[in-house]
Image 1 (cartoon, rainbow, N blue to C red):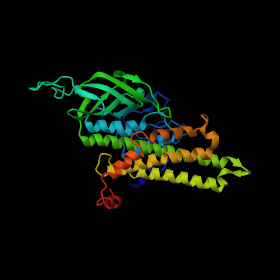
Image 2: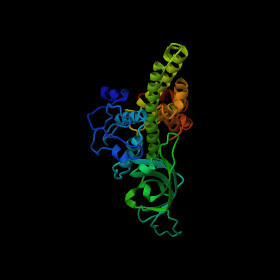
Image 3: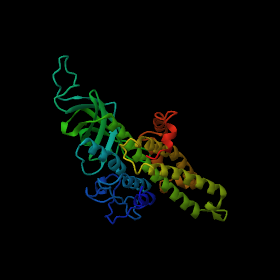
Image 4: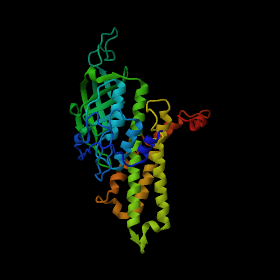
Length: 362
């Protein structure tokens, strides 16, 4: 990692003099600059002043922007758009729409060709004259579906993995939310026809890359929210006094603060390790699986310590701590929890490959 990239990953701001783009809670259109804009997280006190990185931004820049979005509890799908949906569309050879995007991996859909090809044994929709699809089923808990310009769907059809796009108004939407009140909507599809121009057959490797990208995006958001917990907790224990001295002067408080900072550093370091890598490359699996395992495992402990040191005031809606901790509780389970990723991390590491994997630089 070069010095410039390291600086991006280790600071709270990326100031490239681009204009500040503010976002309302669910009006994410204003959140995005034009497609050629440079990545920016400007040095401002506004909690949601962060612009979408350009399509050509590096993984390190995208992670830094996602981490900052997590730290500021930005109410828009920056990580979902920049780290997951956009790259997958480019890899599949589909056009990338402007504006906020979402994604979902939906193995339970029923998919068949809309224009079946003749077959001597009869057509079951498994062979088609073109790639136009008929899709039935439910896309569950799609991040920011109601605000998305388009949703990228990865699914397994009888003829292999496919990637296609749809707009939320093509489906029946049931609103939902996670603990942080971020939209997690269900989209119900009733024999929806997806035109061939919106469909691509993909390899199993790209389907797995989608899972890795989603996990990496969520890990970066967790790292940012963890840093916010540290900032708020240190500020609170420094300002709050008991028995004539600040809380931060008590040994028990110091010890808990040290554990909080330690857990946050573990998450940040795990995410930074993925910065130089291509999420679709062969070295990415171990690093990203380790990052999500660590991020999910640390999230609950970070939230616990932050709330313990804040006391009762930390659980109120007026205190900003809940914006970070409810996201930590939600994000630790989304896109695979620590158990799922720990198993995926361990599965390929046999007795003969563990040590080389740990000691070899990607």
